Length: 434
Ligand code: KE4
Image 1 (spheres, helix red, strand yellow):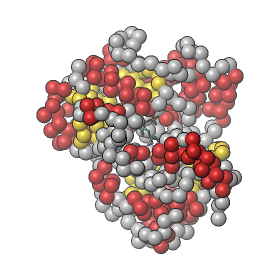
Image 2 (cartoon, helix red, strand yellow):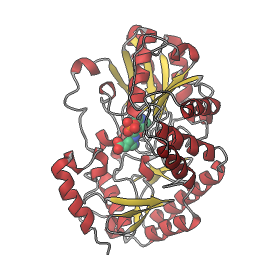
Image 3 (cartoon, helix red, strand yellow):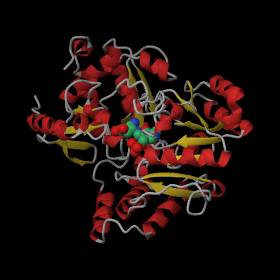
Image 4 (spheres, protein in one colour):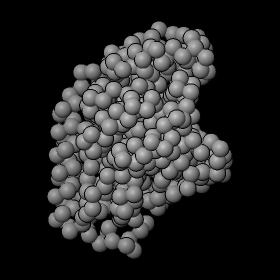
């Protein structure tokens, strides 16, 4: 039995000074029960908590760590950069190098602006789209999460879904009245919104593969249909690739699915684990951004030399990393889990895309937020706890996505399948909550 007395004590202190004891809600484990582990260190596919317990980690900081924790190339780049100073408030070479690297990997991003989070990226991309089109309405999809910017908090996924927050207090009705909602994978609903309000819909923002209602990939034709509707009605198509960028393919979902967005938002992997977000698109669009154009957006630490060094180091390693092998290993793991759940008579739908996967405890198809919510989140919570007792960490929410890294090994996958095999069906039944 793993004792967590230090994590518990730290959590009690944290709750005195930090809302909910965490700096991001989903980390609080409210959806799965129990208390969060305080992590002391990470290396490769594993982390060590404040009590010295080692865990195999499928959270991987929610996506940035496609190379795993503390990859030597990233650690060395950050250490070297830090020795030269942490921030200059002036341009530095690595900003140019990272922008050039992104443009080379994602040709739709002729120009890119670095910011400090995915939230900043989506906020800025929406502002630009509204300025360029002169139309304020935005179509987003139920269950998709685009950060905590006010316009996006209508029926959002991730932590908003995890905590069942109905939108959120503090977001004026006036702000979300221009946010129009459609079910994911439902082109008819989008077409109807355009037919009704094409005169003021300036943008459609979509996770090209949804990762914040659990993993829900696009149905064939969905992304192509959005592209066509945006072209027909003069709206900009924004791909929020904060999760999918550089993960589902080196060129992101836009490369994997062959659909070119007008604007792309990035985060997570682009910073190699440091705070970086970015938004980009054609030169014609991005030249509208200050100081070249009139669309204002700024940030003290945007393009921070440490974050740029980390992102550059990560992308340089990823450019020669074996994506097909990682995809195959993740597929084998997911098939192995399906077999073991089936042997226990537990219905699951496991969605996998590249090195991401989500286990939905349901025997029905999951194609959007409504069907994702039909899955048994309480059983997911018991699964989370059962695996955590066995030294394996999944996301503490049924509305998130497990992340496999290039640091995960065949031994890790075998250990995962053995742990799953060792779970008694009763452990996943009601009444076994931690
Ligand atoms: P950040 O502001 O958290 O860097 O990025 C917001 C964001 C934007 N777009 C997508 C598709 C995202 O998934 C996110 C953030 N992802 C969640 C996890 N699914 C962050 C985890 C958290 O909130 O702690």
